[in-house]
Picture: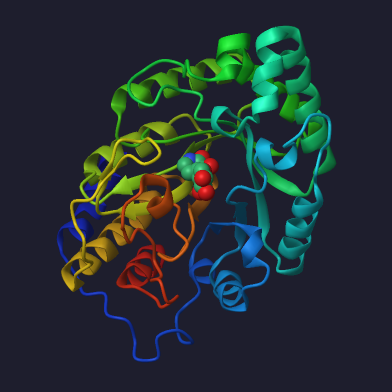
Length: 358
Ligand code: XIL
C-alpha cells in the first residue's frame, strides 16, 4: 500500500498547466468515457429538466446520477402518510433513457427529516421505529433493481471528533441501533443494492474517521449488510493530500466499495453550518484556477491508485458548475468549487480532473 503512494508522489509534486483547448466546449473529452469507473454528479431535477445546456453537459460527462435533494425524505414525504414518487419516477426515466446509473441519496438523514416526523417521534418512539421500517421497505422496494445503490444513513456521526450525532431525532429516540437496522431493512427490500454509510470530513478528521471505521468493521464482523463507505469529500484547497491518502487507503482495507460521493474543492473556509462561511478570497485568479486543477488531478489520481479497481464505486461531484453549486447559498460565501464556471464554460479544474482520470 505504502509503495503505491510513493509511486504517485512524483505526479503530485510536479506542477503542470491546465489550459483549455481553443474550442472550449465541443472538443472536451467526456469524463465518464475516459474513466474506468462511474463518474457522477448531483443534479436538482427542477430546473435541470428544462435546461438543455446543462443536460447536454450532464449527458456528455456523467454516467451516474445522484439527486441533489429530490430523493431525500422531506421531498418524498413532506406531509404525513403521503409518498410522492413522481419526481423520482421522472428521474429514473431520464437515467434509463441516457443509460446512467441512478444512485439513491439518501434514506435516513437528520437534516432532511420532515418536521412532522420529528414531532410524532418525540411523542411515540415505537412509531418512529415502525415508520423507519415501513419507509425503507416501501421506498427501496419500489425501486428494487432500478436504484443501483443507496446512502442508507447519511451523517450519522458527530460533526467533529468521534461519536454518534446526538442532534438527530433518530439517535435521540432509537439510539445508535437505528444505523444498523436501516441497513438490514434496505437489504431486505433490495438484496442486490449497494448500501453505503456516507459522511463528511472523514477524509480529514482522523478521530471521526477512526470512529467510522470501527463502526463499519463492527458491522462487517456482525453481518450487518453494509457494502460501502461514502466520503462526501467537500474538501478545501489546503487539506493535505497525505491525510486524504491515508484515510482512503485505510478505508479500502475494509474491502468495501469506496465512493467519493459529493466532491467539490473550495478555496474559502466555513464552520460546517448553514451560513457559516468565511470569505477569505473574493476573486478567482488564474493562479488559483491552476492550483485547483492540480488538486482535482491529484484527487482523481489518488482514488485510482489507492482504491483497488473492484472497490471503485466511482467519483460523484456535488454539482458541476459554479453557477449552481450549493456552497454559495448554503455557507453564504462566494466560491468556485466545481469544474465549470458560472457561464457553463470549462475551468482548468475540468482538465485537471480529466487528466487524473485518464
Ligand atoms: C445539500 C443540498 O445541496 C442543498 O441544496 C440543501 O440545502 C442542503 O443539502 N451533504 C449531503 C448533501 O449529504 O445532501 C447536502 O446537500 C450537502 C452536504
